[in-house]
Length: 425
Image 1: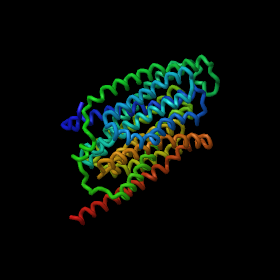
Image 2: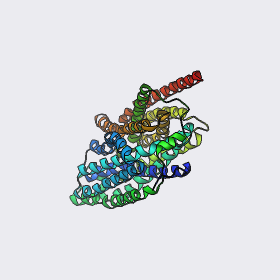
Image 3: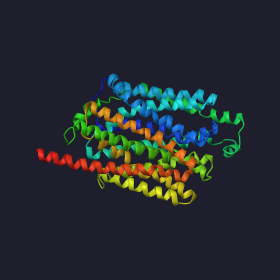
Image 4: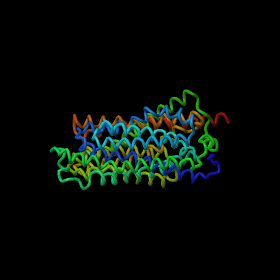
């Protein structure tokens, strides 16, 4: 079915919002998988963070090949391929659970991440160019709200499926051995939900051809930037800065979301509750996105919202360190609120004034930055082993400092481009 360029922006955004919901659901299942796999596969704490590594490293490995793939087959076929690859990743979980083999779980997670990489590169630029630049962060916040709403549901649903109604020995499984039968029964809980998810992704892949999305180049040509196209050096510098900002932002976001389960165990909250703590972090992010939708750019510019969010994140890290027990866990969850408006501001600042192949390649580089979600949780796990879980959260402090530098550079470039445009007139 040929793309229909007359489809309204609202309908296009609604379709893209569905994809962001899917991104969130698949991504934030990891928060429930970490304590689940720690028990089912009898893992050390640092090994559980290979879950996030296997999933997020796919963004770095697959991003540039995904650009060439999308340029060859087109956006719609690329989206279908991404969805089918995700379905394949879900199916790998079935033999992984039956054999209780951690390596196969990691392979499935890598395939899921690779499929999501293709979808993210295809979809994210749409949100940035589908309307005025000064409202791009607001549109990104809407997508983020859909993403995190799914993220709120995923750990709750999977936490109930995987960990609730477990035997009484489950709560003590970190200190006492469970029988092979109990461990296998726990592992088998993953089979049905991932089979259902694989079927849903396959059906969605068949239906996406009816979406009628126009080529992104056509959308970008309708919403040209107020600035002149960047020189090669300026383009390279901006995309590298954007890559690092995404790396730091996603790293901080994933550390707050995917380590909080183990942090709950550290404070003695119990396995069933700890498996659902990721949903608390994502609820916090959801509130942040909703605030962003309301205040940007009506009350606060997307640039200033980015600045304030980073400062709030640094303040909350201080609370994590000094607050006692459960209050410290709450502070980690509150980092979700501070992190909410970071991603929405990085994309428009980095992609401003780009079009054609530059837009696709810049999007791929930004997606590669999602590798921060693979590296920083592993670093957190190592520091938690050397020091303890509380002090390990300080590893994301440099992320907020870098983002402050990114904000400053963006303001400097904006002033320069406006001055240059004024001089040419």
